[in-house]
Image (cartoon, rainbow over all chains, first blue to last red):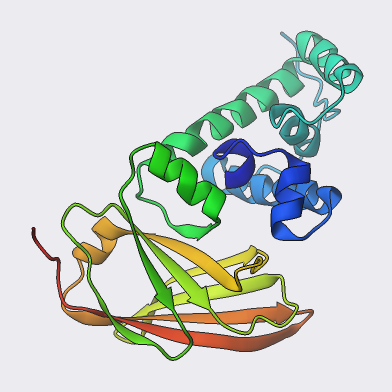
Length: 46
Length: 189
């Protein structure tokens, strides 16, 4: 989340830095944003 | 405006869209739907507010967590004063935090095996005060970087801050290293 929305890095570059696939970067980001949203806004499931 | 409970745009779509990682065609589909759907529009607005709150929250140096060099570089560009500590497992080091430091970056070195998910427990006088779990790669430098607010450290009494790192390998937890910062109060220039 920080690499995407703070350091402005794109998924392929993040994937390279972290040694995972771009798909995994997106999955990890989705999970983290879901947790952040649930934490800040309240746990409304979609 | 009527609400139909539409959930066509999931958070995953909005995240990829906000990250600018969708094709023009995929973005156009999302934009078209957002124009005509109040439910998804409201969800997108909430998501957008979350995303926009991230840079100021991180730049405030009031929140900690796992970071990378790319994030530390961006913090430095934003004028955040970062003090780095390189720590090997078992290290007991004086935690010299100056009164104008804003963020402390702990460069935790260890044998990480092939693990990519870690939990960091931060304990003050034996009591856990912070627990963070994240999927992170130790990278080519063989270290994991954890950032913590210097202001938070400064307000501590003279005390040992213990940082314990464990790795998750499937359902198993494996100790990686324990690092101790001996906090002796804030230093003044």
